[in-house]
Image (cartoon, rainbow, N blue to C red):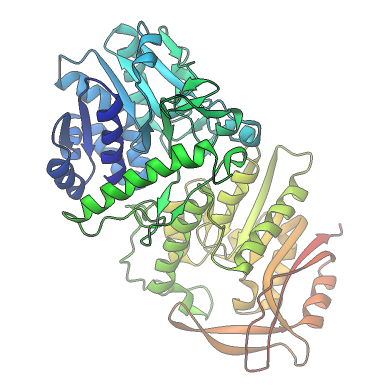
Length: 529
């Protein structure tokens, strides 16, 4: 809501005559927009849209909140066209846009278009992001004519059928559908330089100032900048991505684009807090994906467990895994650190290396993630190798397997070793899990039997001065049994399973135990056939 008011502020300065229809996705937004939006603004509750389009409302049960918002994208302008018959043209704007000059030049360019789309125009340092689509959602113009309405109805039907926060074939959220819409008659690209400039294309351009200190992009007025991933902490410091070409503190982008936007954002944040004190612009609060609505976090689990280490089926573990899943999804969509610790970061980097090794020369690979929670390493793998087809199986305890299957529809979940080890995989992976098994030797033998080539045991903690033995520890507010595994025992058992150590990696996290410090390591083995 703070960003929407800041966008409104810029439109009032540069937008001429306009009316802003604001879809309020919660009660707080409605209250704030009604209190502060005033002239030019028509606030509309999400319930009105859902009543108009019950098929849209029905998707809420099967999609995360952010995925539901993506699904709304084409439904919203259709609702406006049907409800307000006087509207001839609608331009959808992301709330994190900010205008620096009159957009009338853009509307003059697209005057006859049924649909106008904004290309990303990726700079070379963002070339790999083309997998997420040629066009950006920040600015889309629709006209009430045969072509515009036909494309919009097709778009709505497509999003109702599939709209998820992941790459799948030629689809990604609501965005990649725009490439199909570009083929509809009457669709034009917005070619004017200075529209929807952002981190993904900013390095393409030279920024200067005109005589009135208006930012120019390659000599043309900057119409609007898209402040994606722009966070403000409670101490008023900014957390965002600074384009490499313009990171000098005295650059035009820093002084005349980022600073004015930050000032207005601060102004409206202070204003909103007078009527809604909880408002903030910190990363990880309003920005993070919230737990999927179909994840049952209140389950009281009483099914029979596999094995004796039943603490892992506690509700606190499920809640921690839900938080972990949402945190990782968010970090992969931003420039935030991947993981919360040095150890987290190291294991993601190591996994990426291993996955690249396994995938060499292949278009499809199969992976078993033993003890893999909700299969979050699949998210990381798809981010690294978006064109690689990953057949991903995750073995977990029944509670986590059941809930993981609801959160991660791209992975297969099994809840017992018999099913997990019933086939062979290109890569078998066990991250911080072998030491928590009931019998680590039996589990290691099973893991080795299931791989055709590669076995990656990561974040295992070893001892050298005692024989392998169990001790008690705590995890996720529960008492758990943990193996302190003797290093020689581990390597000798691996050898007997036909495994050859190819790499040993530091995890940068040794742990205390009753036997002294446990040494953190990761091992990549190759199976000799």
